[in-house]
Image (tube, rainbow, N blue to C red; front, top):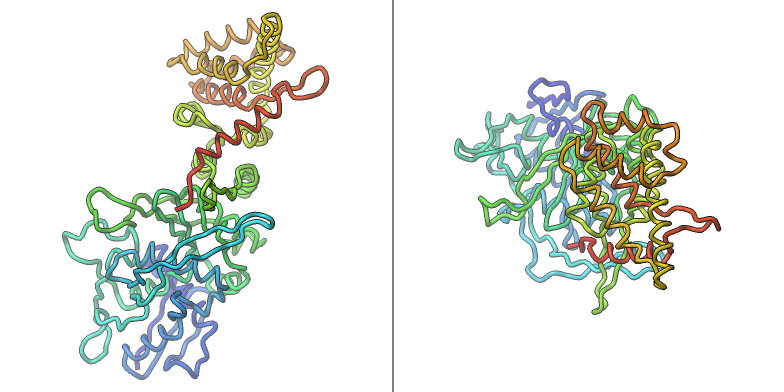
Length: 491
C-alpha cells in the first residue's frame, strides 16, 4: 500500500510544485475513479493519494487519463479545450516544458491553421507541426526501479521545468516522488504565450487554496490566438493576472502573484531554441491591472496583410516598454526618453489616449509643456503662411524633441526647459512655477520630467480656435500607419 500527500504548505515546495499540485487536483476532478487504480482526496491545501498496485502502474494509469495525443495535438480532458485551445496548449507546451527535441516528436511536414481574430478581418494563417509523441505519454522509466517502485530520488531534466536547473555540471536535479508528481502535472496549471523573435513565455500561478483554484480554473473560458500572442514577458504576467481578476472577484482566493519564465535562444547552446532567458515575478494591484487593460485597448494587436496576401498579427512596440514599467510599479511613461531614441516611429493615437492616466502633479507639468509647444507651433504656422507653404508638422515636432533630448545633466535640462517655457508662454504655466520647480530640481527626478516632457510633445494634438486638432488628422493617421510597419510580425 502506497500513500502520498502532496501539500502546498510543504516547506520543500517551490511555486512550480504548488501549481503542479493544483494541476494534479484539476486532472483528478474529471477522472472516473473506476478508470484508475488510485484513491484520492483533495482538500484546500493538499492532495492525498493511495494505491495497492505498483507505483508505476498507478502513475501511468493516472497519466493516461490526463494526457492524450489526439489528431496531432496534446489533449488534456481536464482543460476542456476547443480546437484553437488545443493548438495553443500544444504549441505552448512544446516550446516550454517539451522544448527539447528528445522530449517530443513532431511531424516534419507542418500543417497550416487559420484563426479568425476579428469579424470582417482576414484570418490569421499559422503553421504547426503535429505532435506524434511526447514525454507525458511515455513510460517514465527514470522514475521507477525494476519492480515498478518509485526511486527515492528521481532525476528531473531542466527542460521539464524551465529555469530550475542552471547548470548540468553536477548532474540532473533530484526530486522526491511527491515533487516529481507535482512537476509532471504542472503544465495543467500554467498559461502559455508566444512572444516575438522565436521566444515563448510560461506563466506559473500562485495557488493558495487548491479546491477553490480548481473550481475557478473550470470557469476559465480558454485562450484565443489573440490571447496567445503577447508583446513581452511582462505583458504576459499582466494579462494572466487580469484574466484571474475577471474570473474571481473575491480577492482572498484570486491568484494575484505569478512567475513568468521567458524562453528563447542562448549563445551557449545552439541546439535548443527555448532556453531560459529571464524570470519575472509579477505582483500588482487592481489599479495597475485596470491601467494595463486600458493600455491593451489603445495598443491592441491588429491583423495585417502584406503584398503577397499573407496575414499576421501586428504587435505594438509601445506595449512591452509600458508593461515593464507597470510590473515594476513605476510610472507608465518612465523611460520614454530611451525608448524614443530606439523607436523613431510610435503609435501616436495610443499615446494620446494614455496621457489621460496622469496624476495631478504630472498633469500640471504635462499641460505646461504642451502649452509651450502650442505657442511654438502657432509661431511656426504663421511663419509657414508668410512663406506660402504648408507647415511640416513632423519636422516641427522632431525639432523640439531633439532640443529636449540634448541635455544630459539635470542642470542643462532645467536650463533648457525653463528657457523653452519662458520663451513660448501659455496660460498653462501661470501660477504653477513651484510645481515645475519640483519636477526640475527635487529628489533628482529630472529624468522623469524629461520623459514626461518628451511624451507631452510626442502626444500633442492641441485644439485650435475652431475647436479642431492643430495636428491634421492625416498626420496622426500617418504616424499610426508608419508605426505599424515597425510592428513585430508574428512568427
